[in-house]
Image 1 (spheres, rainbow, N blue to C red):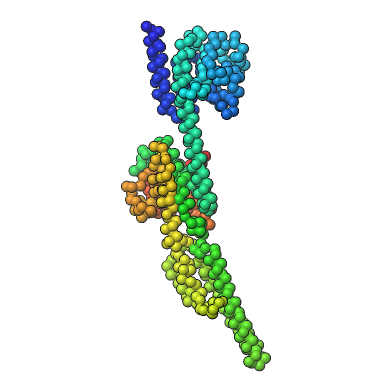
Image 2 (cartoon, helix red, strand yellow; image 1 turned 30 degrees about the horizontal axis):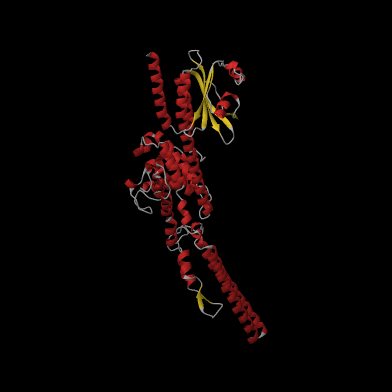
Length: 498
């Protein structure tokens, strides 16, 4: 009865271990759990677990009880574990030193004395060998028996399924990670001026999430808040992909550095050169007429006057064009700074074909050059802002797992303001989730400090903080999170993107 009771206890232990194995997805923790459970089930002094690498024809391990070891690899068929993996057959050795397959050099290196060995294959449902469990030295000093082999094989079957699931989970994670990174490359190749932005926003957002639990009273309303592993990854993916919708924005709008597009500015340059050429031709005609109609001395005097007027006109036209070029830059200027554009636009010149009068500046050019802040027209700005909706639609097409299902919504809100004046949905304070608030602060900070934007200069960290603090005072960004962001120096301490 005592022996039967002990067997029932061991079987119960295997069932409990099986439940734990199913729940564990981290491969390293899973392997440790299998090894420690195997040692308890067969009452072994030590256990080692080897996994089979079928592609390379090797078995490998980095989990061995009682031995500090890094990853080791050796070919299938070598040693006892290699033979078990190759033949898919268990081996039970009562006396290790009497078996020629046993490598005694390991004992010599470690100082451990191996007496008995039980080595079983970990078989998948399809009977493929996933790995090998090796137990050493039964604690009572006796060799391992048939019951030990049966119990270890039962555990090995459960372990094989768990390892396969963990490996598959890891492969899926790697596949998805590759997809996300490929998407980031696509974003940045579409808009090279913001290269690295997505990765930096992810780093800052996750960094803020990491320091928040340690912020204490500084976190204000968010005191005690934290992100679990899944929420942290959810935020990271949302940050990496928050600008993916830029693929739906026209390239000339997306990378527009000045108010006029390069070709438009060149057309203007050519127009002013044409105007000056016409002035030169008229001046030359006037010179000829002056020389023909007046005595030589008077004619030369008139020619000099004509040349002076032409030079003055050249300077005037050059000044006009220089002013146009200065207006073309995306400088923030006060109201009334562009009044001179209207005066310039009133000027006329004769078209090269047909002789019709044409304005120095066309209406759409005056409208673009009069943009007071930035380089975009209202229509272009709306197109740029549409990238948020494009992002949401794109991310919503992805079959996210349950733990990542909020990625589209987190990314969707990164341009919203707590005052309800953001875009595209004008959400209010109560509608904006914690991860989105983190990403909004990170996105603004990086946009301010990034040195790769052709249409603006990077600002120092302290200046960026001042701008963000001003936004917090206006209630646009979360002041409590911003305080943690600044006091914890998230930009200086956040972990780099892998």
